[in-house]
Amino acid sequence: MQSKLRMRVATVSGVVLLAGAVGAGAAVADASPAPAVQHSVTASAWQDGATQGGRPTQQQIAALFDHWNAALATGNPEKVADLYATDAVLLPTLSPQIRTTRAEIVDYFAHLLPSHPQAVITQEIITVLDRNDAINTGLYTFTLTQNGVQQQVPARYTFVYRRTNGEWLIVNHHSSVVPEASTP
Image (cartoon, rainbow, N blue to C red; front, side, top):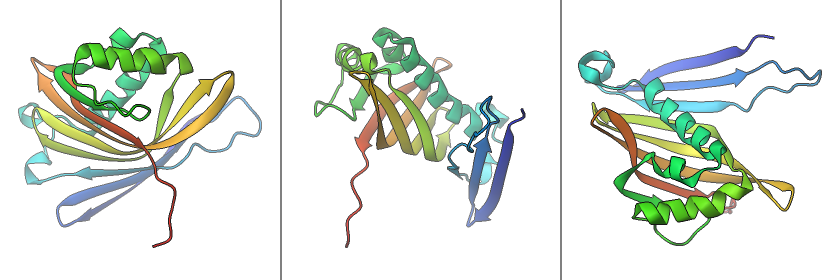
């Protein structure tokens, strides 16, 4: 079966807004469409030619998340930590401790990876700051398996990336559980 991509593009005051959904055909008869992903990419006039001058495109920045998610799937905390800069700060979802060293980042993922975490972005906002700095922030849902039981954890995230020696690394990563809705 073929995948379908639906996308809407709007520009408001120099901001390009993309909203889309990807529905992939599946081998099951009762396949429901994939959840809608809302995309918003902040752009300025210099980003119109995003690949000029070595500036990343929004797709390149979005792919960095996919690379991180694939590293989670390896089950190897060292591979995940390799994606973080030496001076990175990690404010993780499931720990109150701020992680500021490679050893602390490895430790966090060593405890998280046995639950086989995988994240699916439901809303993202990508901001390309310049040719070497970008931010991907939004909402994702983690699927974790603990004691043989899968659970879904809706969370907010921010990844700040810096390109150093041609390699994109995470310099700041904040993830927190989405608070329950409250009545104002």
